[in-house]
Length: 195
Image (cartoon, rainbow, N blue to C red):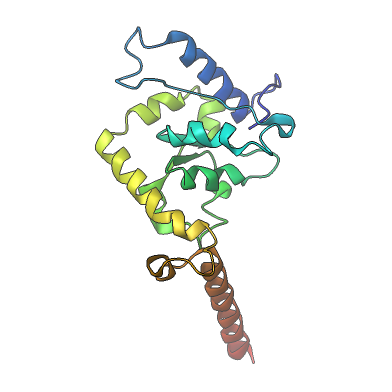
């Protein structure tokens, strides 16, 4: 995404600085722990990715983790792009997804498919994102990616005449309708209780 270029402390700036520094050290000092490339940035500022999804999807397809810092708003389209690419989302505040997409991304399972690193720890306490992510055992990373792949039907809209196997799974529309109906039922029950 864009941003992170201001001199004021913010999560995007901290991410850019850490990524630039990790790219400059390369694999020579052992920091990569067997990874070919530690960090990659895709600058989509000024709408350059709008008509070129390959520009941002290709790096996500090859990554284990996709960072999801808040921008102008806490949520990002990139979160859903990352899930579609099988990339584990890394959040920096609960408002980015956990508190907004509970119908599609089950709140009680968040730790099984994502990582949360408090942005204050990164920006003001010097916590290195790469250190946190590299401490996650490869077996757990593999399980998290498998869970991300299981989430894909929950964040896409299924084609009307899709295969029978896909029709058995609830898509984003089904989950939205179910969630809306549950919310209406709850409100009606509350009204019955009040009356």
